[in-house]
Image 1 (cartoon, rainbow, N blue to C red):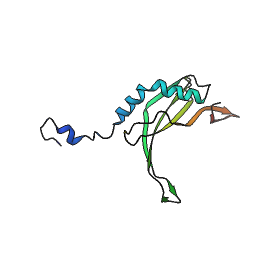
Image 2 (cartoon, rainbow, N blue to C red):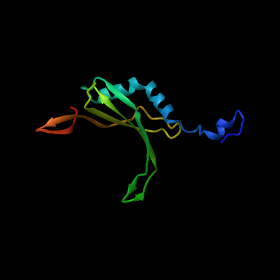
Image 3 (cartoon, rainbow, N blue to C red):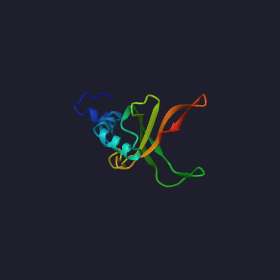
Image 4 (cartoon, helix red, strand yellow):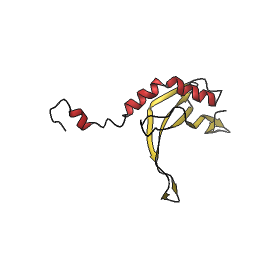
Length: 129
């Protein structure tokens, strides 16, 4: 949609929601804080290599047997590797603030912290301890 005025951008872009790029930029500004939170949860983690392109935002509706219950909520997930181990994986979830639509960096869950290992000739993911 092009109207030919300096205000066209306000008609074509939703400024109430941050873009994925803006979300990534926000997380990059807080990369050290994010990494320190992970290191506090597992003392063997010394570094995290975040995969910024893995960022996803999902909305969830709690339910009881398929019947919606409670309020919808939104989380941001981001993945990466840790301790420069190529066969490692980490995934962290952050709740999204409703009023700003940016993640709450004070609250998070480590959903996955594992490495690929060979056990008895078979490869499998195991928790990093």
